[in-house]
Length: 119
Image (cartoon, rainbow, N blue to C red; front, side, top):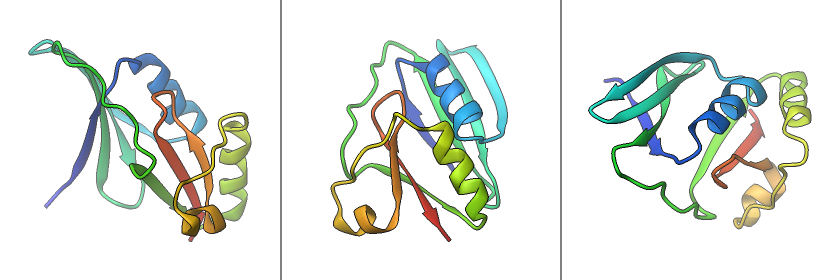
């Protein structure tokens, strides 16, 4: 079984820059005008999973929710700190007290939370 997590957005170029350049996820592929949709998908290293973002198709982006989280566990403390430095200015406070105590939280351009956790 393979898995891909997909989310619609109205800010595809900003999300590409955020996830590729700031978060450092490898861009695995993209597509244009596939049945009216454009999109990109990123590799989630070490998992075999992909993270996809689409735009178009007459759909609007979902509203962020404080419990809709992307939690990334990093083995390398120095890498976690480098990513956090690139995300400076996007910090937020998670709703869940567990994540408040155990993660660094940031907002992506759509307002969804990305949590960086020391593995």
